[in-house]
Image (cartoon, rainbow, N blue to C red; front, side, top):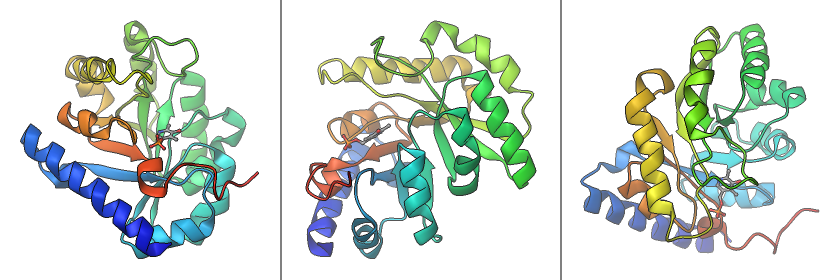
Length: 227
Ligand SMILES: *Cc1c(COP(=O)(O)O)cnc(C)c1O
């Protein structure tokens, strides 16, 4: 398992290098978040063995089940979060990449404050306009920014998006996120969390600082799927 995963990691890293070369960017400015959702502890252990250190989960339940086994690695909560689970994110995640409301920010802020830490957050923006996607409408971002400034223990670190499944549209969507950063970046922070297995090279060409890659590293999500 470790061999197969390390081959895949090398392939992904090579593609990241290629995208950086094409875009005139430095590899050290890109964080590869390995998305281990649905994969068991053994797969995470193999990825750690192969050298990965940044891991992402989109469900709190899985974050809580895995992160404590890997205290030397960094964990990112990358999926939609309900307020009643905010405390666990503060306890286990280095960063939260799916902030999409003031009320959630307020709850995270309260828990982060009592935990004595600051939680870096990425604002999730719905760039594809699909109704099925979480995230703020690009035209409503300024509404959330002023109230967010009040929260001392939640710090905006950037913008995050999930592009549409149509690969012909993703480049334009990534560009939209980057344009939003050029307008609001002084408030939202410099990060751009965008790009998944199917489109992380395009995302890097368009300025991604964090790519969230699952199946390209671990294979299709069903063989080891936990029910
Ligand atoms: C699952 C997931 C990913 C990774 O998806 P892959 O296509 O497997 O790379 C990235 N971001 C979020 C928010 C996810 O839920």
